[in-house]
Image (cartoon, rainbow, N blue to C red; front, side):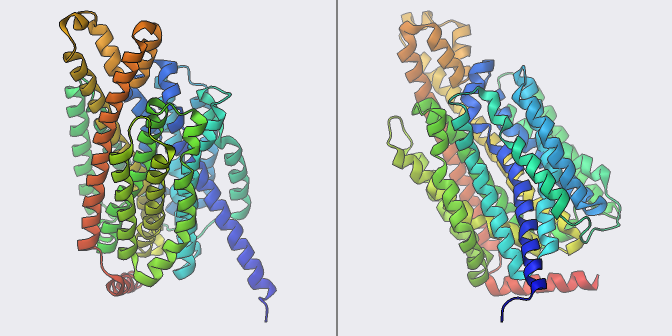
Length: 526
C-alpha cells in the first residue's frame, strides 16, 4: 500500500521545513567564508597589515562564536522562529555595510555585526531540527544540515572568485543578499511559531559574560604577532580569564543557568564539544591560509582560487550521508576518529607538498582529504551534543554545536593567522639580516616595516620599485611559505590532540547507547 495523503503531506512539509533551515544556515555559512578569497584584494585596497587581514577573516566568527550561547538561550525562551527571522533580517544591512565600507576598521566592524546577526539565526536552525525530528530521522537531518552547510561555506570562495574577476572586493559581501531574502520568506511561511520552548528566564548576565570571555580571548590571540602590543594582549587575556571565571561561577550559582554545567560535564557532550571545535576549526583554518597561498604564492586568479575549493565542497556533500550511516552502525567514536585521520592527512599534504610552482593536484588532494574528514566528523560531533541534552535545552546544545564551528573557526583561524604573521615577519627579517652590508644600507626602517607588514604590502612595495620587484616578491613568497608551514604544523598538532581525546574518552558504540539512554531517563524523571 502507498503512503496515506496525511503521511505524504507531513513528509513534504517536513522536507520543506528542513530545506528552509538549511537555507537559513546557508546564509550564515556563506557569510563566514566569502571574505577568504578577497583577502589579498582587501589587503591591497586598504594597505592593510596581516593582523587587519586576519581580523577581516575572523571578525564574523568572533561575533558568531561570542554570541551563540546567549542567543540560543534567548531563542529557547522567547521563540526560535523569532530569533531565526531577526538574525536573517539583520544579515542584510551588515552585508551592505561590509560591501561599501570606506575603511578597514568599518569593514571589520561590519563583519563582527554580521557574526552577531548569525548568532541569532544559526543556532536556532539546529535547535529546531532537534525539536522537530528524533532518532534516525534526526541523525539524517543533522547530516544534511552539517554536510550541505559546510559545503556552502566551501563554495563561498568559488562564488567570490568569480565575482572578483569583474567586480571589486566589496561585491563578495553582497552574495548572501538574495539568499537571505529567500530564506527570510521561507522562514516566515514554513517554520512553526513555537516548538518545545521553555518558560524559564534567560540568564542575560551569563550571556554578557560569555560574550566578553569568548570575544576578548579571540582578540588576544589575533594581537599576539603585533609588535609593542604586550600590554594590550595582557589586558585582553586578563579580561578573558576574569570573564571566564565569573561566567563559570554564575552558571554554578544561578537558578536557571545559560549553560548547564551539569549537562555539559556529561562525557558524550564534553568530548563531542571539544572534538567539533578542532575539526571545524581545521576546515576554516585551511580555507583561510589556503586562499592566500593560492593567490600570493602560486599566482592563481581569484576565480581559480575559488574553484580549487571544489574537492572539499563536493566530498563534504557526498560523505555526510555516509557519516550518518557510520554513526548508526559503528557509533560516533569510530566516525569521529575516521574524520580526524583524513583531516590529519590533509594538513600533512599541505606541509609536505604545498610549495611554489606546484601542480593543482597537490592542492586538490589536500582539500579533498580535509573535505572527507569534515564530512565524516561533522555529523557525530553535532549529533552527540543534541542527543545528550533534554529537548528543552536544545538551544544550549545547538549553541554549543555552533560554538564548535565558530569558536573553532575563530580560534584556529586566529592561531593560524598569528603563526602565519609571525613566521612571515621573522623570515623577512632573517632574509634582510643575511644580505650584504651595502644591500642592508638601502633598506630603511620604513621599507623593512612595510615588507614585514603583510604579503600585500610587499606586493605594493614591489610595484613602486620595479627594479627590485622580482627580489621583493621572491622574498615575500618564501616568507609566506615559512609562515604557512608553521600554521599547517599547528593544525596537525591540534588534530592529534583531538584524536587522543576522542580515542581515550569517548565511549564505544554500545556504551554510547547506554549513556544516551541513561541521560534520557534522567531528563524525563527531572
